[in-house]
Image 1 (cartoon, rainbow, N blue to C red):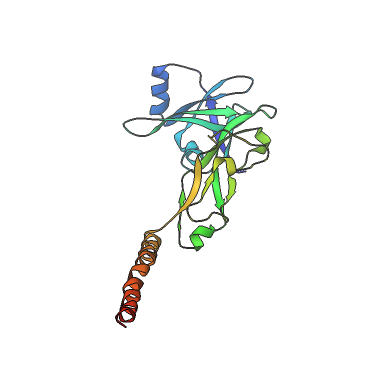
Image 2: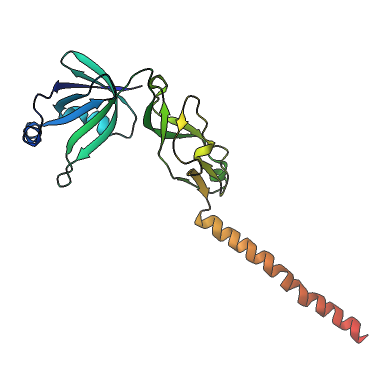
Length: 214
């Protein structure tokens, strides 16, 4: 799994004034928790771009004063006006302690319903899971090849060894819906099927009429 390295420094001063000073110098304050101790640190805002501005799930190795902390990103705060990154929270990974993480979904295969003319609609991009750090992966693969027209794949259909999936089981992940063209085709076919008996009835009546006169 890809790991981003962040070089940081311990924060020696805490408080609003110190935090403003940190940000004015192009740094971002952060905290690492979940391990033996909570660590407050700061690092250049540019060092977080690789893990903040990406849809991928990655690990972070944060190096502070000769120590290295293996972490996952847990929370971000942005300025409401400037939209600049102003705070980061990391969870330190401890091998014998389960963690909760949000892992992106990677769809594989081509749905049967798409081959039949339907349109694939993805309703979830990630799943919240609980597992040990050694089982963390970049994504969760979901095979959609058997997904038919008007069919759904739900959270309960995803079976991942070593993962406890925390999302509600009945939530749809992906579905295949009728396109406008298919709906029009079905509508036309249905109308023709209903109209067919009406067109044969007058012919039968006409054929019976001469026989009655004889």
